[in-house]
Length: 431
Image (cartoon, rainbow, N blue to C red; front, side):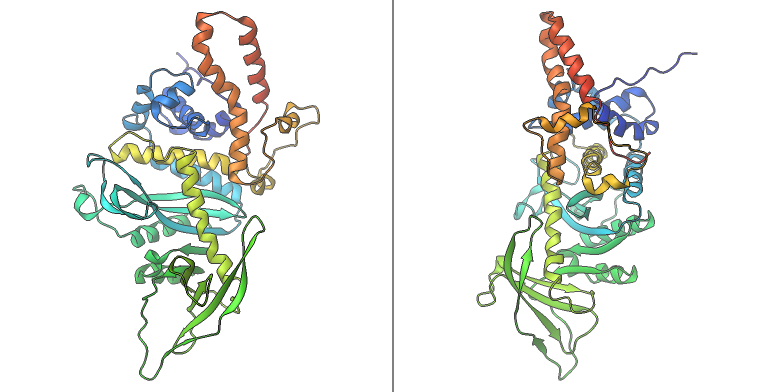
């Protein structure tokens, strides 16, 4: 009986993380492509196209990566379930803030599935593109992707598709996450979702606390004789995660008499009420929340941070496939790479079992001596350091074609020694 060969190693921390998924792939080649995509997405190459990734990881033929996305028989649903399981095990029932929003990417032509002329929120206008509804988690200052669902315009539906509005997709996402045991301390969403009666009803039915945006022309039916009242403006400090503060003002808007669901207006200037600096929100949080609701709703911007990192650093929109089956796979690998970075953050480290501290003589203790090592605790800080660990492997892959022309044993040995040192860095994941 012939034993299946072992997967080609890359860098230990990537290999350890990807090994958690290996049983989901029917053959070793598919698993290798899965690992190579993680290496390429985490690397500092500017464009995460398949040819660029293939070059960075030492694979001249990008067709193998394309085949993995488009045709290889692996279940994206199972990969997603495994990623969420790893995250849930690392959270260990700690509740987090759930943030929902949609994001879009401009795409030329109409051959790509679900591309249509529609509003692309992150570019602020109508454009030809593809849109997805996304859920991100926020724990302390670390974001992590949870689920995404493509928005399918009615005139671009496939024969077996069912049209769903963005709020309906968001409801499905929340229900799926709850069914998997995730716990939310708060749900945040903008006015697309705040103006949806079914969405708010679902949050109430699921007994979730929420703060959602509203349009300024939001209407409420009032009984005869009741009117809209406003409390006086009260100043508060909008506190950002870096410790900086900006002055804000808040007032409650009362429709008739105060009810369990409450409305607030927040602004940077209570005199002029600038459109781009004033927010109208609704919440079911109870008690005297005037001093905290503005800062809590401000956490919603963290999903924009998540989108930016997924797109600018990991290549969310760099795919060159047109079938949604392949696009979904690409997005799922991006979410997996994003999760790998999130799980290395300090907020998750105490939850990683069976991980002993390295000895004082360990090379890991010398890593912070690198002039570009970043000691910050944010997601981007962690990514920076992981890229430094990847750097010798990527550099060796890029220079190897020359070493095949000019035999320089000392240089080969140097890369081998440096790579072995980088491989003393291990992934923080539940096992």
